[in-house]
Length: 399
Image (cartoon, rainbow, N blue to C red; front, side):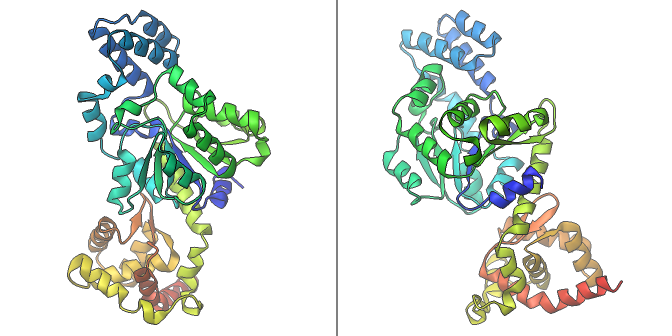
């Protein structure tokens, strides 16, 4: 089996996504290097000495560079809060989610940890109708709820957030304080790593956050006893080494420079694999014989939902929702063929209605697949078209 297949098997609602800074880059937000460079320029404009920071930047030692700059700011009576306020806050707050955020939001978990300061994930989940609890660094009560499993729909921002710039972690001293001190944030992170499946998206092998997790794993846990996955670019040669030494499953994707398109392909492939082994798929296909489904309870839900979304019932919408719900996940091309060749609908109209249903959150979509929304109207839609789909499949089988 491939690593993606293995991850799909392990993936569940308790899986935790660790979202690194690379996920924010497509939205135009600064990389680590750029952010520290901006901090250097800010310090220089205030009259601070930036020679040490420049030397550290030449060595690609970003944490030490940030620490040197913060020390200079302190001597000038300034701090990171001054740097992140005003213009910098506007840059982070005004950024818009991209395709990678939409794919992340489709994964069947709502447990997210991120060192990112931006609010891109909050915007993405809110647009999808899944408001998550934002947990900030040091919020002991909410952190205890996370580790005890009482809070599962959350975005935990353990290095701070642009909405609270005074709590942002950036420099080497702050990192070491988090790593070696008695910080509740680091203790919570360690507990979760030992107990949950972690999926790291948006970091390089030299990313400080990834390095800290990696170093922790090798010292406290036997590699065979953890479930830790990381999507990394062009790391194929290091996959076996990281698995043996750290217990980390590296999923390699290709690309150069700013090209991370293959990561999107890998995430889309993962979504499809998860859908194929999701137990709920059986409910979508076998609902007629299932004792769980109460047909009286769901009857009429489909049309009520469509009226609320469109002020009328469009038969094509029922056909689309039913076809996708029957299979749970289906290739777009197969859906188009069924609705056009078998049902006689116009292709442009099919495309328009699919876009509409996706926009109204009644259907999910990736570039090449349509995914069912798990709700009562989907069950009814599948029931409504079941006989027709079975006839269609038999015709295909018989040529």
